Image (cartoon, rainbow, N blue to C red; front, top):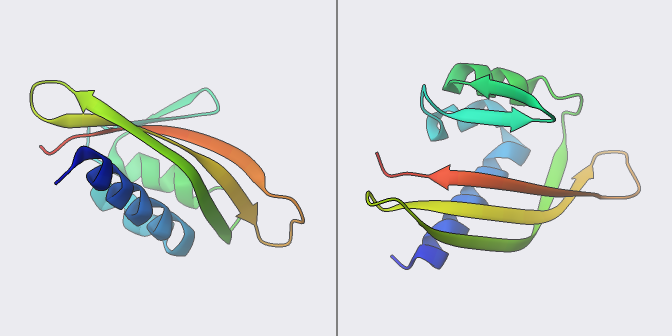
Length: 106
């Protein structure tokens, strides 16, 4: 599959799951995965899911503006950079967001 198509498919899956069921994101992370959120470093699938499910909002809707990717490493990984808008339930204005991922096949 084309890297651009693969990165877009990953992003669509990730944010659909985030918006509908954040607890289900655990399968996308490994024990050595790390999430840095507002300066806090969180490592491991269970800890990352605990952080994501403890965010102070229950309902949200991501609207993706850009998805950029590039190859990473000899094993076929990718760096994926996403930007867009985040609409929280009950809020009039959307928030801007950006997020980077290292997507690996191992």
